[in-house]
Image 1 (spheres, rainbow, N blue to C red):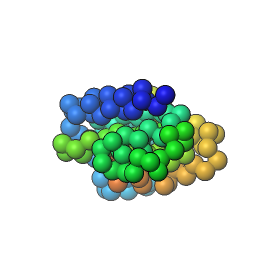
Image 2 (image 1 turned 30 degrees about the vertical axis):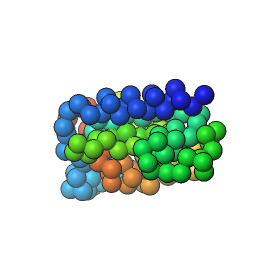
Image 3 (image 1 turned 120 degrees about the vertical axis):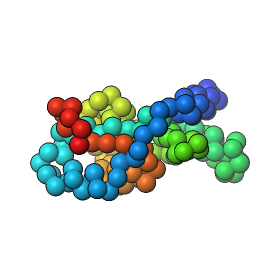
Image 4 (image 1 turned 90 degrees about the vertical axis):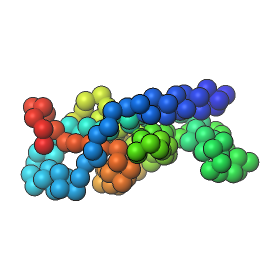
Length: 155
């Protein structure tokens, strides 16, 4: 039953390959956004054009990884739900498992929600949600490209 989700994950990766290039969010731009903490919840977070997410009732990231030679297939419980983040770094497509709430946070960004709205959605779904941890992981992967005020002007 998990095979269809693994195929969907592969499709998200294939769509990431030809995505437009974009510079990842830099520490300087983050520092500029943090200068006005009251403005943070209203900022829009733009993802790298290659970013895609997939939610699954199955261990889709682990199963996909094992079939790529990154994991021990007999040790994987296919029935453990996993959510995937796909992002291209240079010419390499990376697939990562998202921590609790991560799928909803990124899906919110992709849907155009503000940082505050996307974080609230993720927090409601997962009591273990930690916004700082999620943003740090997304920055490390190069999954975020910019912040924009809700008015649409570049930041």
